[in-house]
Picture 1 (cartoon, rainbow, N blue to C red):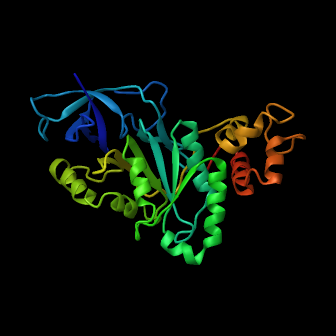
Picture 2: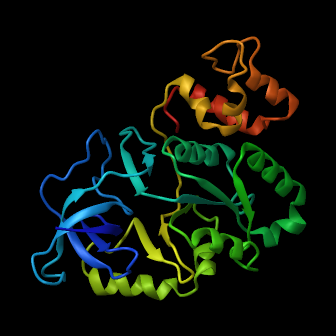
Length: 312
């Protein structure tokens, strides 16, 4: 009985490594391994610490390790399907931070989408860092929009790194942040997430290829989520480009608690609980009127209320 971390999820097959030592080996899930109170479609996620056994002295394709238990998680990020099934899928577990890569244009940013990601991080206790990529385009084309975006999210309490995977702007700062612990890197399709990862460590591509070829060739080689080490230290979990992101159900009174800027003033509301929509003496609405809370973030909050907990 030994302990390791899941570093790749390829459906019914996994790669494990006894971190911080990077030496991935194949594993399978047998028996009815389930997590208490989990409605997720995947009982095992990248970043999970697991107990495993070996059928042989060393794990290989013929004698893979067998995952027998998933240890308790310190945190995780969950994605809820936007289709009618409303299924939940755990993206990654035991994270030190989530790095959310966004762009203002090419593709155009959808602030409600970003805010749903941020609320998810807040709900599950994962620190979020926002990376505004493609700054090589925006310095001349949209300087006012850059300042406005940074004002919104820095004002909410989030770290925003102005970044260009092409020129290297902001990459050293991001590399320093990611050099400790495990970082989830995520974002919508087309924002340049893969380019940011390559800028952090240009040697990652061949490493990913070797792992796939050595252990998973001929099997389910399409990996939804994968962890790999940075040469500068730390580990990152890559995710596919997100096109839709639904959240777990929250009571209406709870949603505002996951907007840090609202939480800071909500105790001053005349009525508790307060939905921050129509009540007299609402400190949140007053903060919006005075510019302490951005109307864009407040509108995202109202949209979540109006969606009646569907969070499409």
